Image (cartoon, rainbow, N blue to C red; front, side, top):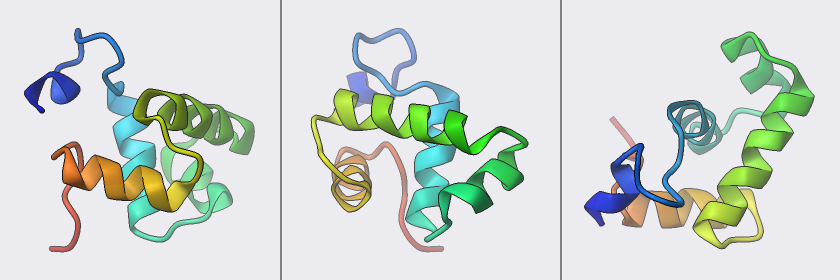
Length: 77
């Protein structure tokens, strides 16, 4: 579980990917995430595709669930 949090571990999420996933967990749209992080919507979508591949999931909800289970992100407060 710790290896997923380490930036140098194969398949680990980057800091930016964790930021994007955290925003997804807060219910933000791709457009809102892009504005919040000062990146394009296309870049948000690219980050999401990388996140899905690294977590072996197919959608935003599964990505948030897996990331929370693995301790990559924290839900709530």
